[in-house]
Each structure stands twice: as structure tokens, then as C-alpha cells.
Length: 167
Image 1 (cartoon, rainbow, N blue to C red):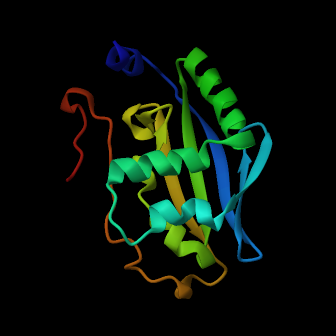
Image 2: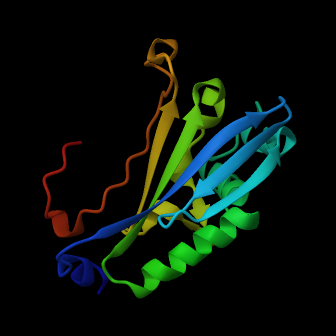
């Protein structure tokens, strides 16, 4: 049924949530979120909260996705996201896009598998109406190595192989 609904949609509207990761005095990250109608939310995260996903001990991608979801979708940012998410559920032609902005000083955080992010106990990208865009914001692009990301998970919605997607 969901495939048929999306196939019948003539125009799709993406509601974007811009999330910026910033550092504060070396002890915290500040997450700021701006919604499609200039709604604003922020929360600080102690670096200790990120230790579980940054530890040297290997944990699976699914577990990292759960931890990343717990970090991102909490506090006022969760409320902002939930309001927008509720809106897209009521509008057939609306989709939600998370734009994650990492400043070049925080490349280690950008390297986590944000593609595995979970929301409400489910992988965020398993819904064809959801998308994630990661960007690295910098004033001097030459400071960024091109081999920063060793793996990239791509999930594409392609019902009944209707689209020619190169692999």
C-alpha cells in the first residue's frame, strides 16, 4: 500500500530540519536544530554521553544507530522533530529530511554511522519518506582529507526495481 501511495504522488515536499553540531569549551557539544518554519531548539551534550559510540571496543552498527538516535532525539530537539514528524504523517506528499552539519573541528563525530540512526525504535531511513544529508562545514576545504569516510551506507527506495540505480 505504501508503494502505491508514493507512486501516485505528483509533487513531494521535503520538510528539512537543520541540525548543527558545535563545540563549547571542550567539554560539551551544542546541538542546535532549526525546523522548516524557523522553529528552533537546542541542547547540550556532555562529551561523556558520546563515549559509548566513540569507544575503542567494537559495537555493532545497529547499537550505534540506537545510541545516535538517543543522543539526537531527546529534549527540545525531540519535541521539534516529533512535531514535524506528526505533520508529515498527516500529509501524504510530505517527507522529512535531516541535514546534519558538522564543523571541521568535529570530524570524528561526523564519521559515526548516522545512516543507521534510529527513531522510535526503528531505523530512520527504512521509511522512504525520510532522508539524511551530512555536511562538513568549514572555511578552508583544503583542511579536509578526502579519505575521511571509509564506509558509507546507502539505502535507496526503489519499489519493484522501477529505477535504474547503479551499484
